[in-house]
View 1 (cartoon, rainbow, N blue to C red):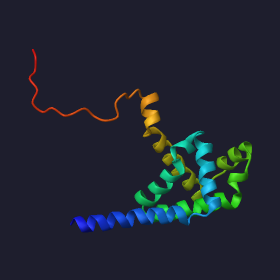
View 2: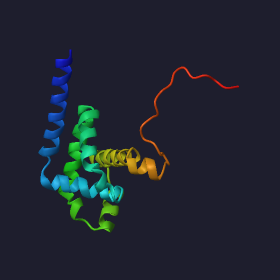
View 3: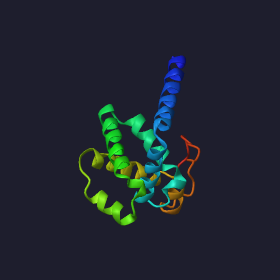
View 4: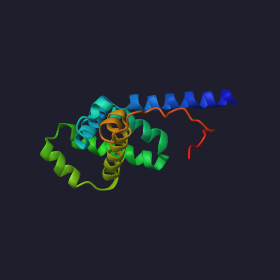
Amino acid sequence: MKRREALRNVLLVSAGGALLYSCKGNELDLMTELTEFILPGSQSLKTKEFVVMMTHDCLPPDAQAKFEAGMKVFTEKGFADMSPEERNQFVDTLDGDAKAFYEMVKDGTIENFTTSEQYLKDVRGVTDLIPKKFQACVPVNS
């Protein structure tokens, strides 16, 4: 059983890596620009890697196909080379696979940020990210 789990994990990791590296350089630039457009400063959290990994590992094949088709639209339109005003206008006119792609990237960007250590400590006020030791039998004082 352990061997099967190990093989499955190796295959999943290699498939995720293959998807990330199968993206052309301009598509990775697109993901960087798009995540920065959605949430400035997200590049430091490795958001593009997170979005690609979550898309590949957690979405069904039909959603992955929409992601790829939407990415193609953004690449063809030259989103990475647009000015901020042109980007806003372009995003306002999205439909179909391009809109689905944008929503997937936006959801992934927000999820990556809200689960980051920086957000949990600075915004949510979490001081200890590791839970304390569980103590099952503790006397109750009255």
